[in-house]
Image (cartoon, each protein chain N blue to C red):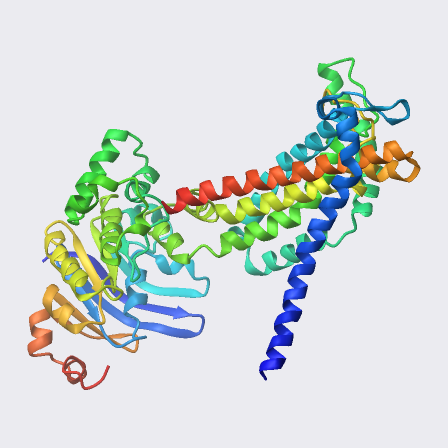
Length: 251
Length: 297
């Protein structure tokens, strides 16, 4: 199996606080990897190391290797713009820009140099169809994205992310701000997307991890306790702590 | 308890009414004093007359309007880009500590009395324009001449005076753009400059425009600094280096020795100033709503 991202001995510190300790993990191509664990276990921090969003915080120090297609993304000469184009991100709270639906989608492609109107129109239609939003919004593309419902906004954010043609999509609890119906729509969307993209999803919701993911990684206090195929993690985990968390004994 | 609340309520009402009443009284007073000149001299002659010579009974205020507008527009042309650039630097580029120091320095500018600005302009800017700017202009136009007392001098000083307003309000607006927008932009592979120009500044535009409106209000109403450095020549200006007299400056300088009729004319100047500021505010508010509307619909 092809490891799209290989994480080796990753340690991350916020100032003197160590948030991640010796994380080793493989993220496989065109599979969904779920990261689960109690609040503050470092799963979101870990997710943000994969597209270097932690660079925004001054006090962060990182040791270890994150190899994307066998290249270390923390190497000095690695182009961070290219990295973020390749590794898209969807956030916990839907965060469309205060612009029209159309402008939200074309923002990324424009940044990366696509200015041809026809091409941009195609991107908008393609990505909105990919997230099953096209039929709902095709008549109001020039209307503000803020007028959409929470679930629609989140699908728009996924479409915006797809518009720059990433290979990997990181999702930080993408459904935690949504109602159950909108959550189900996003989950069925993930099943479609994984045919083309590699997906890493942080979730608080264990049923969700069980439903959508191929692999699951259990984090506790900044360490990876166990990573395995989701079926195994949920039916027959190796580690007692994983079993306790899965069965709801703590967390 | 009930009675006590009623007293408080009435007190608050009185305070609110006092503020409104003052505005109304001032308006009535200016109009009562000045309106007779407007009707005797003729509204058109007064506003579009190009000769302001009170001793000869000529009350055409076009030169004064042109003076005020040219100095204000000049100040905005210099002050808006500088102010917004400074606000962006403070909120997004500078290190937190540096930003803190620079911010308090900018805010200190607001505390300097306007006469000091005027004096600074008089002793530094005016001679500098005469010595350094004029020779450059003369390279292109040999006939150019200036005393240094000019629109340019006024515009520069006013630009500095409105900086604190523009910088602090714009900085606030940019800093309060939700971090989620910034993260979303960066996560799409935008660099810092693209994020600032395409996301942060547009998202903060209503705050930035408010800051410009307030700055413009301060520039057009400023009197003392402008008297000292614009030369007070009531002529319609032909260029940036010409001397001008402003509406405010003329009122302040001439009121002391004015004959009754002249005094009434100065009140009429006040009416015009009042109306110009009202119109600017209306226009600015309109723009704000239009832009704000675009952002939200």
